[in-house]
Length: 252
Image (tube, rainbow, N blue to C red; front, side, top):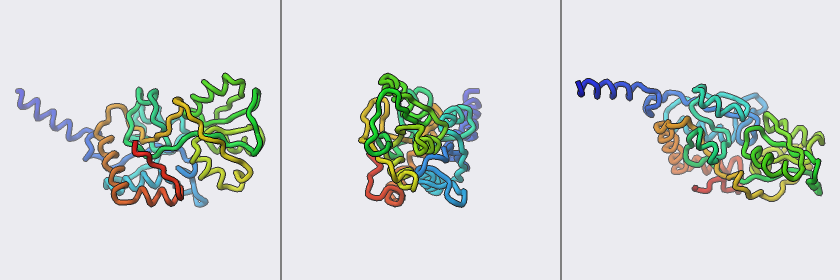
């Protein structure tokens, strides 16, 4: 009887989708409005640093990538509902998020900074925009709002920049490298400057792939793939392509 139970348990393990060898497709959740990490090119094709990382991971692991687009604040609910397998969308590793999802090893690290017009100063009543559901939202609510600054949430980062350019915002708060290598390299962003990095425990710098709580098999699979991308030089090549002269990997 005991032997039969053990055999049945083994069969169940081999047939569960959480078993690493059974992944034929990895469904990555992504926010396509966050250049240069993830965006649509002029042909409408999804591309970007994290998209290329994900595709390279799938090649390395011999599985197929399926990209599922979503607003940023909908990604964790989609993951926990089983609609996607993982989130590859500049998700910062925080203590609050670690209570509801697990994370892979580091994908990249980057601080937060403000984008504003030269000479602009933030004071009571001025407006700062941020991406809804981001760590910047936590900082805006807990710090900026307490200083009398008007904080405004947006469903995607491109909407933040649109209102910044239109003058409806005095500043935007986001990942510093996203601003510097994305918005500020566009014609619209040419008239703006990047403020100094903002040091706060509310906004850690390390980002990783979000995974459903307890999915140890997928974590092991992705960690193995990420290590291989570093070992074979793919990570360094993509880093140089999107962020020339910048070290995006802290090794944390």
